[in-house]
Image 1 (cartoon, rainbow, N blue to C red):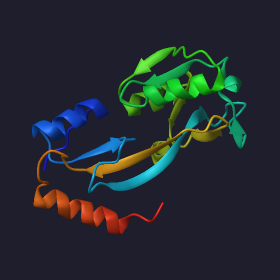
Image 2: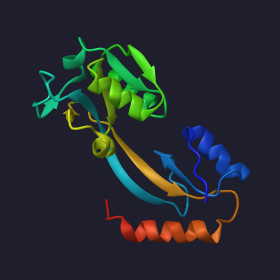
Image 3: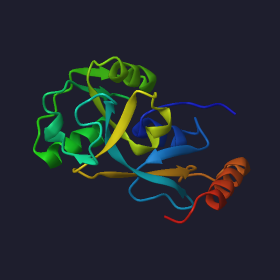
Length: 169
C-alpha cells in the first residue's frame, strides 16, 4: 500500500485515471455511489494558549483581525476563504504554509494564528488551543473508490471496515 497526498482535484483525477484505487475526498458533490462518510468537522481558530482569546468559548474572525493569519496551502484554503467571506472580512494571510506541522509550529512560536479543521485537535502542541468560530463551516470527509471503473476488492473491504467503524452522523 502506498499513500499519496494531493488536492481534491488531483485525487479525483487520480481515481479516474487509475493512479490510485481509493481516496478520501473533502465535500464531494455529489457523494460518489458506494462511498462512505468517514467524519464531519468544522473549522476553528488555532491560538497559543497565552493568546488573549484562548479561553473564549467562541470568537469571530473579526476578533482575530489584528493577528497575522497563517494559512495552509494544502487543501483548506478554499474553506478559509469562504469563512472570511461569511464574516465580511478581508482574506489576507501573512504567511502561506504547506506542511501542517510547520503551520502549527509557527503558531506555537507566536508568529500568528491559524484556521484549521477541528479534527486537527489531536495534532496540537500543549501550548496551542482551538476555539470555535462564530462563522460556522462544516466539511465532510468521504472515503471512495473510482466512479468510472470497478473498485479493487481491497478498497471495497476498506470501505466496509470504515462503514462499520464510523458512527452514524
